[in-house]
Amino acid sequence: DEVSRRLVSHGPNALTEQVRPMAWQRFARQFANTMTVVLALAGAVTAVVGDLKDTLVIGVIVVLNAVVGFVQEYRAEQATAALRQLATGSARVVRDGTLVDVPVPDIVPGDVVELAAGDVVPADLRLVEVHALRVNEAALTGESEPVAKTAETLAPDNGGLVAERVNMGFKGTAIVFGRG
Image (tube, rainbow, N blue to C red; front, side, top):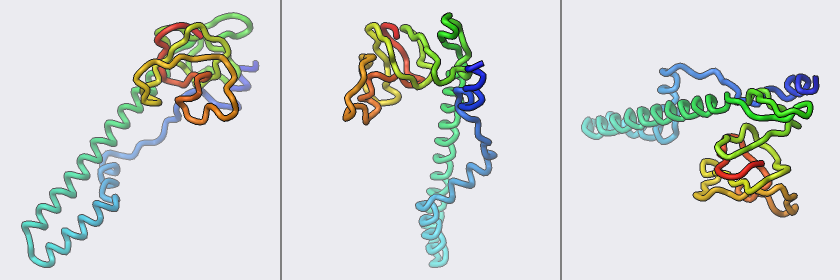
C-alpha cells in the first residue's frame, strides 16, 4: 500500500517523455541561432552589394551549420532514447522484509536497493551499507577510475560536487566491484 501511495505522490522512477518536434521543425530551429542570423544578414548585405561569390559562400556556411546542428540534436535524442531503454530493467529491492525484483520505474523513495558488481544503479540513492563498493561514474563526473564508495555520513562542507558525494549512488552509473 505504501509503495502505491509513493508511486502516486512521487511518480515513476523514469525520465519523462516529452513531445518531440517534427524533423522539419528541428531543422528550422537551427536558423534561430544568433550566429546564424548574423551570417544570414552578412549574406544579405553581400547580395545587395552585388558580391555573389561571397553571398554563395555565406549561404553554404549557414546551411552547413544548420545541417550539423540538426545532426547533433538528432544524435542527442538517440542517446537519450538509449538511456531511457537502460532505465527499463529491474532491480533487487527489499520490500516487506523480502528481496524482490522490481521494475526500475516502480522504485520509490524509501526502497532499499541491493547493488552488486555488474549492476547499473537504478536510481539516485544514499548508500547505507557497502562492502568494497566501487562505481564507474565516468559518464557523470569524468573520473577515469572507479570511485570507492562509503556508507559514512559526510561532513557538512563535503559533498558539494557530485564527485565528492562518495556516500551516494547515481542513476545510470555502473557497479564494477563489491556490493552495497
